[in-house]
Each structure stands twice: as structure tokens, then as C-alpha cells.
Image 1 (cartoon, rainbow, N blue to C red):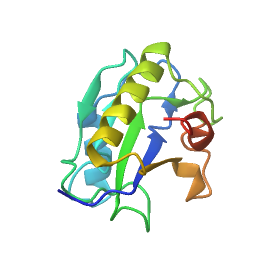
Image 2: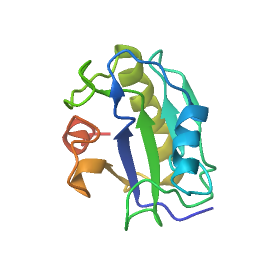
Image 3: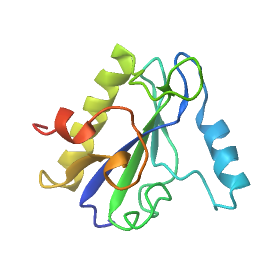
Length: 137
């Protein structure tokens, strides 16, 4: 099993309410020259959790921090204008994210820390303060 010390939450930077799927994100990443989708999990608007890259394979989601982390992406993160960051998580996404984070921490250990992508990059992603919101998980 791969050693994990961080879970990093991302958004897809797509418009509020706009559905996209794992295959779409994978296509975006392949067009960048990556070998696969960069995230390990994607959470759809309805809360469905889809597997992206196998968790045993290092992700491509946070430059400099992929080695010991798991990347989770929720669909959304931008207002309808397509540019303004916004926490667009649906209630179903919020519930599924918490469920997934609990599962991953039970597998990889309670000391695994949870972060937002914005802690490691000059981006708004995931458009909310993941470290603060999930500090008690």
C-alpha cells in the first residue's frame, strides 16, 4: 500500500450546476500530456463518488505534493460566469466528501491531514477552506 500523509481536495473549476464526468476530466488531463486523470476520486453533483486514477499510483493534482497524497475533485467550484471562484458544492457532494474522507482516513490513518489545493498553489481551488472545514475529521 502506498504511504499517504495528505488528502488534497480540488474542484473541477467548472460552472455551478454543470455536470461533467470522470472521462471528461481525464480527456482534459490527457490533452495536457499526462498519462491519466490526475485525481484519484471525483464527486459528481448528485454525490456519486467515481474512481479516477488508482490510489496505488501517484496522482497528478498538486505539484510537489503528489508523492504522498490522494487527490479528490468535486465537480464545480466556479460561478455561472465561468471565472469567479465559488463554493458550489451541493448538499449531496458535501455528504459524499465527508464520507469519502472518513473512509480514506480509516484506511490510511487518523494522522493523514486534509487540505485544499489552494494551500499549495496560488489558486482559489477548491473555492472553500477545506483544512478548516475538515479539521475535526
